[in-house]
Image 1: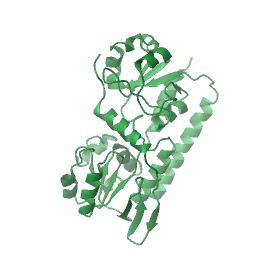
Image 2: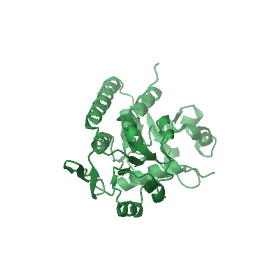
Image 3: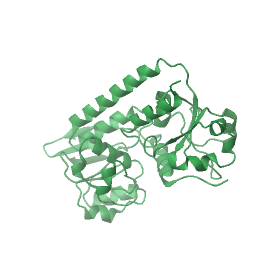
Image 4: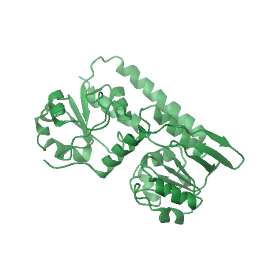
Length: 300
């Protein structure tokens, strides 16, 4: 059995595991030129009220910045920031867990916004250089998306755009839930984060991914677990109605033993989903809910 655990999935797993260990703040005090903000790790950071040169060290943050129309401020992004496609035009600063401080400094940013994967050492190095870093981390539940959008909107001086985006997301979610309320069937679902000889990993009940599955009209078979590890014996025993896996990994999963024994594999109920729709806490999560709802509740 081959081991499967992509770099992107490692980032997802580590990022959301870190969320369970910290509180969330983002309180701020504004003066004419600066804000003093308490970020999600409890660090007090003085940031410009209207930053002009921003580096994003998080794919989710990059997506939010674009969704808020603040991309003209974005001068740097990580190699994992691949959505929207226009992000490719922004300077690539490299990785996240191995942040290139020298590269960031060379861009002369007045603000760095990161997620949960940025090393504390890098934060300290950037602080020594006079570059403020605000950590806006992935939250455990879907509603945390609204908080993160609001925070990023405040940081990039686009609060009205953040409010409008949150209203639009809430409205779409509400409309979708009204439709789901008419369907009492909730097929069981298993989401593949990692599989193979390295172990089986999925999203437990304390994750925004679990919330997305539920909001899509599915029932996560791993909702009772804490953490991410899931035994192959339990997966085979529970035999979910549907499997969700990244599109590019769907064929390999279906052809790997013993997963080919699952009913969802044998009966063609494996849902391939684009990277980023489900594994990042970003506005595209609405698209994940809409996509999964159509696959889990096909029109008969």
